[in-house]
Amino acid sequence: MTAALRADPVARLATLAPTISVGILTADLMALGADLARIDGTGVEILHVDVMDGCFTPMLTVGAPVVKALRTPLLKDVHLMIRDPLDKLADFVAAGADIVTVHAESCDHVHRVLQQLGTMQNANDPARGIARGLALNPGTPLEAMEPLLDEVDLVLLLAVNPGWGGQRFIPATMGRLERARRRLEAAGRRILLGVDGGITRENVRQLAGTGVDLVVTGSAVFDGKAPADNARYMLAALRGS
Ligand code: DX5
Ligand code: ZN
Image 1 (cartoon, helix red, strand yellow):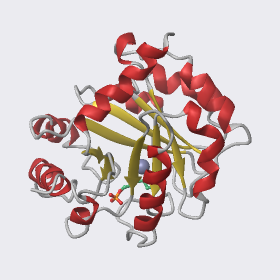
Image 2 (cartoon, rainbow, N blue to C red; image 1 turned 90 degrees about the horizontal axis):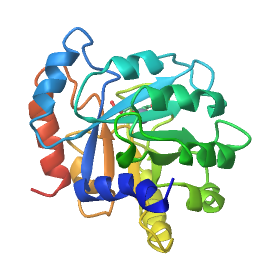
Image 3 (cartoon, rainbow, N blue to C red; image 1 turned 180 degrees about the vertical axis):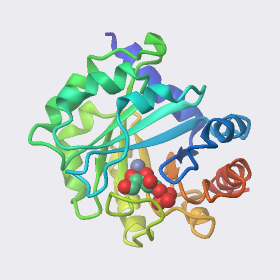
């Protein structure tokens, strides 16, 4: 696959940045289809699916069949919180993932996992490519991303310890985001910066203008009231309006 094709997912996401990726972990599954249809008109174009295996995280959530079952024009942002993801990548790619994010802490050979992901074709549209994400837990030094920067399109900093929606944002994340942004700017090619966990109506504005490209937010959108209005609000607040 040519570099141009692989670069495409980053170019596409960069045109949306700064933007929101809506997490469905706390969504009302019985209303999800209708809610996603409403969100599709708000300017938010990315859907975040938290895949937890009950090993890497205490919680067990969904697998590739659920990712596939989500029939939506929104881009599928698949956050793999699973141990040893190498052999499972193909299932999530076949399920239509546009962004696949793996954790630096999830296996011994994360460089190989990212390389493998780089050889895969987007099942929705080969020209779209697959954006390769690297996630770091709050306790993982930023230096862990250094040897992997040639193999990633997105660095996702967790602002909570993975496992649940609705947790409190860890304040030290702001400093990590600032340092990570500076490091990525020096990378010599466009690598997106994202943050995941604990983003609320109250704190989303602090991310405006910080150079964060992708903000994952779940329970602040799916609060059981008006997901589409919440999504619109979060996006506008992130963009400083
Ligand atoms: C946590 C997940 C997050 C979480 C976000 O392990 O990776 O994506 O679902 O949910 P909120 O926005 O409610 O913290
Ligand atoms: Zn997540």
